[in-house]
Image (cartoon, rainbow, N blue to C red; front, side, top):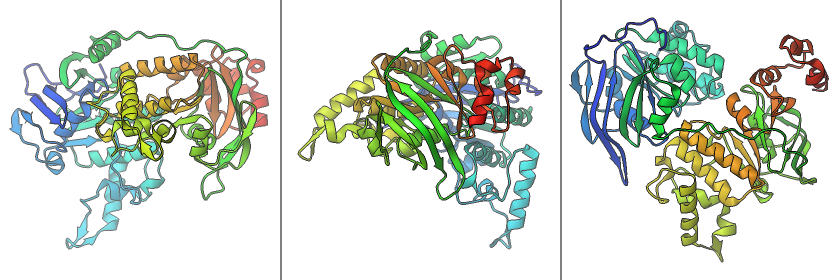
Length: 541
């Protein structure tokens, strides 16, 4: 149990928030049935379940975005009807959504108090008071934010902090956090958890949705499990193992199967990246500098590094999403020019972006259209006509193979859970049958059961001879899945490690190297300077 320094609810006391017999359906889908929840005052209640289990739907009911079809809600033991988002905040319920709800061209202060701006004579915006109130809130929460900064220019992590400040500005009693750490590094997660500990008091509580079991063990008091839209169980964190929680989530035991081991051997090099350099659009700032590595047939090549290291920029440069300043890309030894993502697709390179909603999906189109989109012209059309039957059959095959939870291939993609949307993007590139697949954060926002399915799929693709570049912020995932690991720091490759060489400590060492650091840093870590080659690599960089 997390050491929150708060007074948990005594046995028999009235819960802060209760949900009883709640049901919610959408066209063709029953999202929730007889759902129940109990949040005690003074606790962090973790809510877990597979993608599509109904977590986000339940939270949208609590925050007034949806109205329940059946059931009822109680606050402090009194029945309430949540009439809308504004009413929810008036009742003391605030939510931090998984998807940001910010206005990019406005400042931090304007986003925090949007719709509640202080005014003079009820007409004129009091900009000074707005900034002053925002600064006082930010300082009280100890967040690294400038109230005058434009939100669109902030990092994803700092945008998350703006969402948190906005939610807490309502002085809520119930704070709902939906995947709040998805975009945060370890230090930022620690800051967030400290903020939660300070927020939780005898009269407040937190509902914390996360797929990260290690976080739940650190921050939560109890864990509520739901599966397929139904309540399963609520257990104490200290009395229940992670394996038991996962088994309740997925209804089966998850085997922690090993990923690829060792070097693939002398396989053909299918992709060779030599000296890639790029600059940010409209800027002289270097994003990548002299990035070089190769990818073998049947290999899973991990790319690791801290936020801003250049991992995503490398992927985008390879597929032509960002223009190259310098460098060469070779496919099976032959130089190719990739100036646009369509060129990459023609060369057999598929790219799953970390921002699936912006770059990977047509959210208002159905599952069938998204799965077959990348192959529509080549495989599912002739003489200007689409073979709908063939497209439907193929989409159905991959919906089944990837266990995509959808009532049919005709379901609009935006109505799927985040994890199932991710699977739709993967299905698109599998249908295209690309030889090289670049997966940027392929398991972000995906539950543990679905992660195992993705891991098994990546291994199977590698065994079939597909070559995979996998970018991930989760070091255990990189170590588990990669034959080799490319480590990046500040837009440069600082080391390429084999599976046998790679450890979390070594990856973090090379991920934090700067051009002015030297071989002594490797000695302090207990690494062999001759083995690491740190001095030579930093010098070459």
